[in-house]
Length: 165
Image (tube, rainbow, N blue to C red; front, side, top):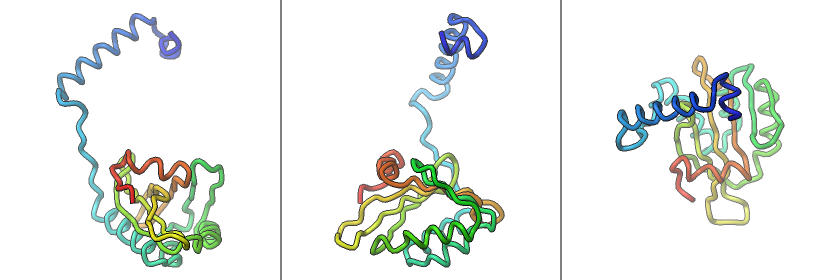
């Protein structure tokens, strides 16, 4: 009833539209929804590769160089965010040494390049899921970087088919 009211229709008309939509999808995709993932453009692929290499090589300067001057950086579920290459670099510098190393696995999220980052703590020998990075490229650089940090980030790995370690 609430949805019908929001859409400006009756409950019966909205239910009818929903039934027709389900029938249409069932005819077009009898096996269920397609599991086809979008492919990165060559430019996106190169940017993603450079981003992953910077993390794995512990190269903070190389990572910051991939950002546009006006890039933004978000960290759900935290409310903090940063704008600009200098501000993002300054923040990353404060947390960069928290782990002994990083490994990365490429994926896609909402049609954009994404990376699962695994971290090795200074006291451990096991690589653990740390964060999911979604990259919004623009003009060969990173315009927006959304990093799903713990506790949320590691919980997302299975949904993207990323290995547990």
